[in-house]
Image 1 (tube, one colour):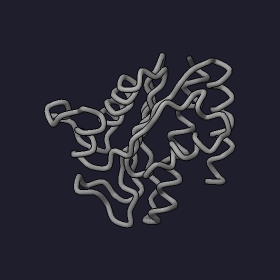
Image 2: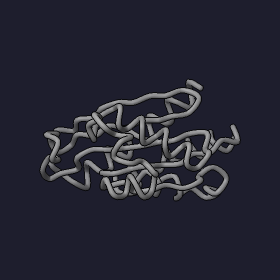
Image 3: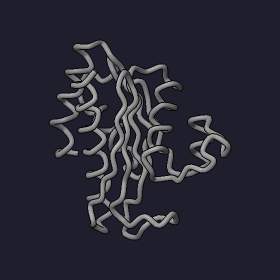
Image 4: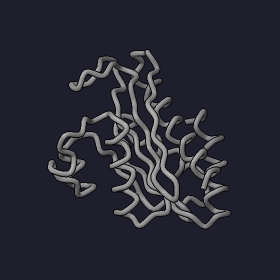
Length: 161
């Protein structure tokens, strides 16, 4: 968490100054994105909520996305990450939606992605998605790297909006 604090604090200041809000849908980062944003005092001014969407069941129950909504779409991909970011943004009526989906490790996921693979996305007035490959099997380290990538992408989006 300590490595995530500087960017989370910067994001909090930006979001508060712009009077904007964020909601988070994350998977392999296990709640670290939300935790980093919530660790900043005054988070209630910008953080509307989040969900750890680790399974298809969670995706359906927490985001209201049925199997048909993801038909032909591979999990842990940029299109899927964008769908999650758009969906959480809509669900919470937030200015920004942030998402992460991947394989923390120590092994890969059932879709053929190696440990250390993650896709993160941001949806708002501008949209971005990126794929991260750490090349490591370190589960906790990957989770932190995934959260860092998502927070950095939100920072980029806020600067470009």
